[in-house]
Length: 294
Image (cartoon, rainbow, N blue to C red; front, side):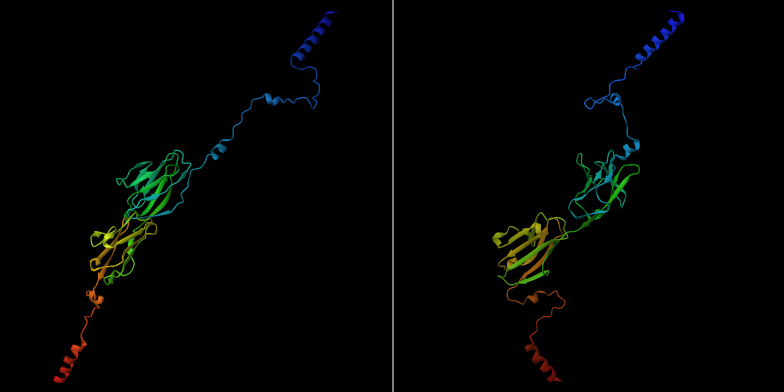
């Protein structure tokens, strides 16, 4: 073979080797329905990330669970609880502020006020930051702000209304009875937000709730805010001032007169309309004599 022929043969062999080495080979037989399907992309490792704006949009938004301008009513001497529920607070810090003088009461669980009646109540993992006010006074009434630190801070406002519970004894402020009659007094506690723990009755300055041996019977229904005093057969010793004293309300008093035969109206000598009883039979001769003498 000539030199040119050898050179051409070498080129053909080199090209054939390069084609086989590069992966090009005989065409594989077509896949049948029973043959497994192999996808090239299964051998590839791919990682995808959502857009940053989607990450921020999926973050739970902080908001208040307590309605703005909530009104809490409490009576003097009781404990007031002002709720402040905050959803998804994150790293926020809750502060309570008294709006009428912009006085900072609490920050977190720390009380900043010199008045230790104010306290923030929060249980671990709870969303509620309640302001507790002990021994409520009338001056505590007003608007309070629950503020969460953020940029800018967010707040809601709550109003505390303070009422004064009082006792009332039904009927007039004075009673007139004859000896042996029944004395019944009923005391009700009004303008109250909670039932009284107890109701004491006083006769003059003596507490008589347990004076059974003197014929005195006291029954109290705290749920109904009622207390009854019963003396089946009142005597002169039962006359005097009776006072109903609930533990959480202003007391009420009534005066009981026990008379024996005399006109009960005569006991109201302090009344401006009282006119003493006159014996017209005695006055008649004097009047007649007066006219005759003229």
